[in-house]
Structures are given as C-alpha cells and as structure tokens.
Length: 328
Image (cartoon, rainbow, N blue to C red; front, side, top):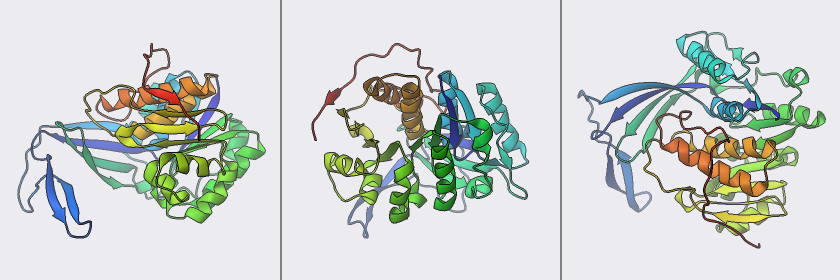
C-alpha cells in the first residue's frame, strides 16, 4: 500500500433535515432566461420547524483521507482547524479512521470551518452555507512537512485560490519523487492561466465538465479530454448523471453511473469519486478497475447521510457497469 497525503479543508457539517420546507421551488430567471430552482420557501421573520439535526465531519481533505485509510493506505491529512469543539470533533474522526493528524495546524483566533447544510430528504439535494474559518487560507502550511512524511502521493483539493502555496507543495512533492492528483476548486479555476502553469507537476487531474471548459476550450467531453491530455498524464472529467470520461494516454473510457440508486445526500460525491480512484490505483489496480471503484464509491456515498458513511473499503464485490473503451 501507499503513503498518501491529503491536502485540503476540514469542516464540521451541521445538517438541517426536512421533508417539505426545503423542497425546490421553480422560478423564472430574467438573467438566465430560463426556469431555475430555488431551495425551499423560507420566509423572512418566520419560524420553520425542521425534522432533525445531524452532525458530521466534512471537507474535501478529510473526506479523501478517509477513503485512503479505509482502503488500507497510510493516510495523512494536512490542513487547518481551530481550538474549539468542532476542531475536536474533526480530530476524533481522523483518529477513529486511523488517519495521521500530527500535521494538522491550529490557526490562532480562527474557528474551525463549518457548513450548515439544508437537506431535502425527498430529492437528496442540498444547499450549503459555509463559514471557512481556519480553512479559508492555507499559506501557513509548510511544504517542508513532506520531508518527514516522504509521501508516495499527494491528493490535493481546493486551496481557496492560493496558487503560490499549491506551487510550493507541488514542487516539493515532485522533487521527492511523489506523484500528485489534483481536484481544483472554484477559486483556482478562476485563475486559469496560473492553474495551467501548475499542471506540469500534476499526474492525475480530476474536474467536471464545466470546470474542464474553464481550463481549455471546448464543449464536448471528448474534445475537452483531448486538450487536457496536452497538460497532464491522466485526465478524468465527470458529468453528473451522464457519467464521466477518462484517459491515461493509453486507455480511453466513457462510462455512466455505477448504479442508479435512490439519492439521500449528494455531499461528498466528488470527493468519493476522486479519492476512490486514487485509493484503488495506488494499490496497484488497473486504470479500468480504478474507474469502476471510483464510480462505486461515489454511488455508495450518496446513499448515506454525510460525506463519509458510505465510503467503501475496496474489498467489496463490484458488479459490472456501463463503461466502454473509445477512441479520440
């Protein structure tokens, strides 16, 4: 098994769960010139009774680290928390999963990041209100920690647009012979030129279709994939319920959903897909099998409440899924 460092956010997720007040409401948008959905009809000045509360631990960094740990890898999380009860909950979760938390940094005068998630139990859709807190910035983190860790892989989620800190970690990792899988966030994608300059260090890039079109020109998955492969060795582009497309320059695959199951909560689905792929791939599995496991891991996560309950171990028996080899 591999030694994998997960870099990213750590949040406490507070779920407000309801079956009717959070149901989507369609409205007409004059800007988009189309019907859009708003989340519920919460009126100002009123009290709304919700069905129940649930506390979970989230954040892309801890979600990925959990996948790696359950898969049997040596999993290390690097990120920021505050000195508070939410930070304690995150550390307890990491310890429970067997994740090395010794490189977690406590940010003075900052609270641990928190998300309030309004969840519609009928559709599984949600709206997330996030206070980033200690996870708002990452420039305090030191790439020199990698000297002690000697990782095989870095799995990196959003650094809130901090390209300079990402570059420091990427350069350090490559100088040590480590490989990098990168799932950039909104603020990185808004700096497309700077983001492209980072891709020379990246071995595996994971983005969705909209994100891919922010990096390279194109509207069709195959052309987006072909253009991303000019920058990275392996590219994976997801497209929601339409599945995904992926290539490592040797194999090219188009695939649908692993299984069409009732969705309970979509939080963490992307983290489960990306970390699921790397967990399997770093264990020596084939590119094809790693894509299947990524899809299965993501499918399992959305059937449970929270981003971690449905994460698989890699020992499950997986059935066949719609996946075919294509030519670009």
